[in-house]
Image (cartoon, rainbow, N blue to C red; front, side):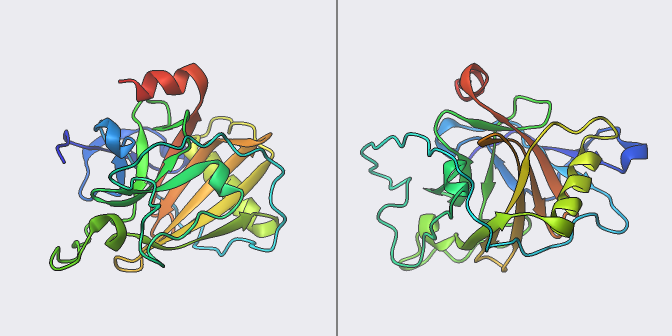
Length: 246
């Protein structure tokens, strides 16, 4: 898959919130919805001492949010991009309410998490689409021999999460305030955390959804206990259409 040279955004603490353009040493997130081509890749390295958000299990016992599921477009899918023909156990379902906000897909380079139809995730303050790959940064892909199929054999072995309350919510609030670089964080009502565990090296991604009303407006995707994190805006309507149409 052809790519342009990625960019790496380093975000220090609130006192050092200037963005620095540096070459990425490892790719964590694949830019763009996989069938739509590629764009520049971005990530945020949030330097925190101590870490603002450790790898905290979400509250899976919380009641699901009362939201309406988006319309699902059913099309013939010869490449099984929607994982409908995945072997048993190789395409874990996305739990509620996260299944209203994202889709797990089986792309040629391995599974990925992408926004639902009609929405786009972009690196904060940019128009660069982002999706989240099951292949962790710096990892060696499994050998492509025999019956190996990257769509199913580079995958998420676990997808679980819940609504954050108490200390978990406080840590997530501190995280987005740090990401805002000293500015005012965007408004939100609730925070939900989804943990996605890759079968490659057991790498765990922590995704924080900052929900206003029924849908998230921002997401922070963390890797390695938020030593690497990506601050995302969730676009809808004309803004999403413009980004995805490029």
